[in-house]
Length: 229
Image 1 (spheres, rainbow, N blue to C red):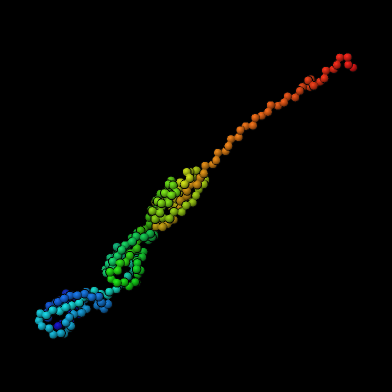
Image 2: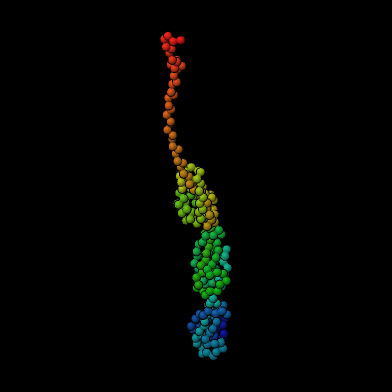
């Protein structure tokens, strides 16, 4: 009986049949010493005396039962997935907010250099990439906040009480609309807090009094009595 240890399945089959024997049961087991796909055990053992046509069972290695998660940071998500699947791992892709280029891997869970069993699911977080800032000028404050948050931005509000506009209306935004910004960036919106001034009450005119006529000097002079000195 020849030794077929560390041979591929095809090589082992050829060696067994060349010795006038037959390949019997083929099983698989993990091994930290024998590379995946190679024979790690045989039954009967090498140099055993067998009758022609006897069966020889072989066990193929499936490789190390644990693998180390590689560093895939900075790779495209599809390239990272292919690399992890090649190690016998399951992959779940998850888009996250990041200022890294679109589809670039930013993290894995479990993290790099972790030893895990084959078949473990690894979450690959990849960047959603920069996004266009939506235009919210002219909207009411509440709606503008919701639009920005849905787009992945953080609204920050300042108020302007001088500009004449309906109260609550967005007057300006920074950064400007349609510019690309990292996910999670702050967008400052300036909202009108203008109040219409109260009308000034009109004063009623005060009526003027007619001046009193002074008596003329002729009216105040006494008339002399007749026969007087």
